[in-house]
Image (cartoon, rainbow, N blue to C red):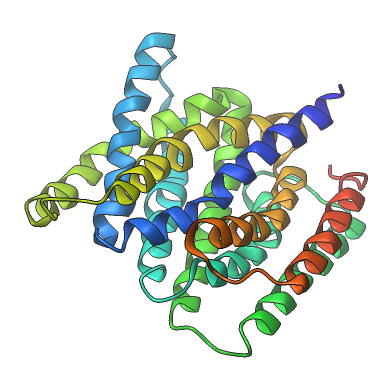
Length: 288
């Protein structure tokens, strides 16, 4: 198996894990507030990350790496989780999933700005076509309805794209698993105060579904998913692996159908097939 194919497989694992995040978040915010879900999940992940760093005797990042870790944390530990959790209080998970269809294009742009990658014109064209297809799907599926959560989701996309690009570039030196773990650990002093503030107001009895959903977004979405995702970006590059995110909305749609009973139509299947074809073509295009 080639290095590029290995990277894409790791990236695909990350996409599947991340694709389940919005449905799980949607379930969690039915009984928990957005701060508890978004920042509380990071606190749990940070504790596990600290144990991992101790067990593996990971080296301490230098000053320049700490700055990049802070930027990564701002995007994928604070920005995306908080904005998407708030959005899930107002919009269906399926709608949020298709809105995240612009994430691959945003990641490609961020990789050019922050990671020094230079996608070819054909790669840009392929990404734009794939992103346009997903946006068209969002418009058709949403019946031209504008959700209040759309602005929050766009901001979440920008946060995630910047975090992915900077974290992916840093993973080449620090290691993919170490990047997310150190980002979580250095975020802990900022995460704890708001979580401790809302802790006394939490419901006394949470349903099993909410506990499972919170566990998923804490352990998988916030930690283990990035082990695979960052490894994929190291092997195949930020832009190329980022294009796999074109598949993420459809993972979200299927999981929202299975877990939440949200609608899944033949139109979804058709667009999914088209996007898979775009990803297959993009895999063969040049990224410097």
